[in-house]
Image 1 (cartoon, helix red, strand yellow):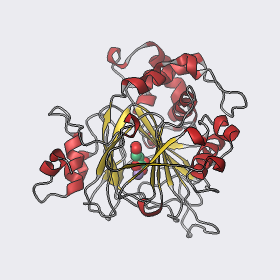
Image 2 (cartoon, protein in one colour; image 1 turned 30 degrees about the vertical axis):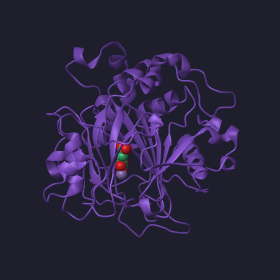
Image 3 (cartoon, helix red, strand yellow; image 1 turned 90 degrees about the vertical axis):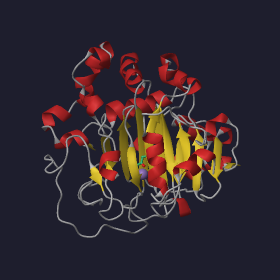
Image 4 (cartoon, protein in one colour; image 1 turned 45 degrees about the vertical axis):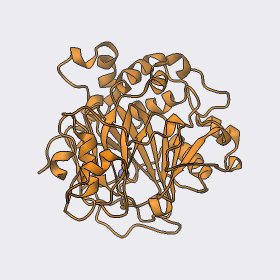
Length: 383
Ligand SMILES: O=C(O)CCC(=O)C(=O)O
Ligand SMILES: [Mn+2]
């Protein structure tokens, strides 16, 4: 381990928490020397290029969801983390715009569930995009006092809607999973050696530039033999991948727009966290600005072109934000949920602080804050 990480590990506080704080703190100039960057091409000691099976997905099927043919992907594994796969932006130029638009305009729509449902009447959350787009299109946030609904959006759930209080999914809180996102997920997981993946639930996290996501493990799915798929768009992040125990020291890595991660096998239940959002590097930032490429979709694409006026809103939003989508298969073959009483969408938020969600990932010892709003980021409850 390099000097920096060693020095923060000197006393007895648990290693993951210390490193989380190290990257999160903003009172010192950031030190990213120990952060693995898969996109730089320079294979670090731990980065191992992996060859995926190019025949697992037909070129046309990859291209139709906005992906390059598999043979052109740059995929990596990480020594010490079997089952972890990192794919450095496998998206075709221009196609990220479609997925960003879906995450901002389409997926937050009803009947999907979002953090705002707990604070607002349905009439307000029915058209998050419509109520935000005009404002975002014409005025940057510095020139406004009030935040738009889109800027207050912290999470959206799809498919089996995750219940943050009970930390469960249930049969009776389900809405159809978006077919385009399933097609994308099915093809990426197949390329990584998991044919037959069924996208049953997704959590979308919306991060502002000062957001973070606390140390946790995703274990609520009933079958852990399927991978957890993660897609990221917009600004970059530092991602910490730890071990099976919460205190195990993590590896820090950058995630940039378009990057895809798979946590499978022994890596499926590893602790992880996002201590910091960082500005996208120059070469990745270009893709977030360029509308001309947003409209150039390949022939036979399942994706529709993004209207210029929609892209104006999306591009302004992602200049300062990051969106992460994790897609999960919840049930194994033939598996079903245990009987549960009916659950309705929560519209009150008793006992919680405004704008965020807590999730306890290992008993009640720590709280994961599902929020990304301003200074109320994850540290306070967790540390
Ligand atoms: O934002 C990320 O990269 C991680 C998100 C995550 O861990 C989750 O939603 O469970
Ligand atoms: Mn997670």
